[in-house]
Length: 176
Image (cartoon, rainbow, N blue to C red; front, side):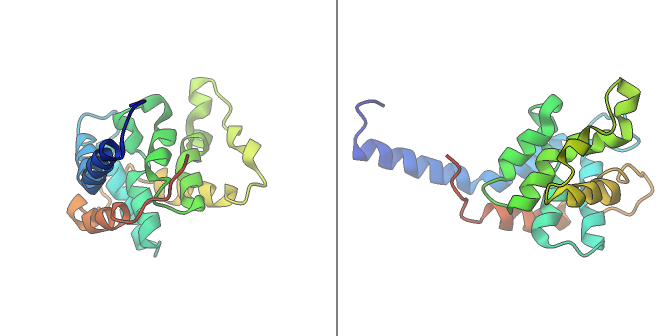
């Protein structure tokens, strides 16, 4: 669009606004796609729902609950760097702290399993001293790592849908 006009960019802006208005629907659809085969005793969707349920049960704020729900949504597009994908999706809508936790949770989860795949379980320690280090440790220990329990009473996606819609209904911050 090297010769684009105001009218052209008005059209693009209108299209982008319509697309943004459907963001929550797309996110909810991506979550539903996680409800398939899994090497765990529960599906990836159930893991996300259980993580959000634990966060809610612990009294987390709504934004943190949605981040717990969506922390693994990147598995749909990029399983090898799912944390970065989930964090990029959430960044315009969430606090710096929640963004940092989602972005780094995959590495921090490695504390529990990296030894089994020839990696360093202490890899997360390179972030020791970071202001959100302990919060990410806690996220993983209290909510993420424990949320593979087929017997845990987990809320359904419909319960969390209003929170997802509220989050993606916010005016996004620009990150250019």
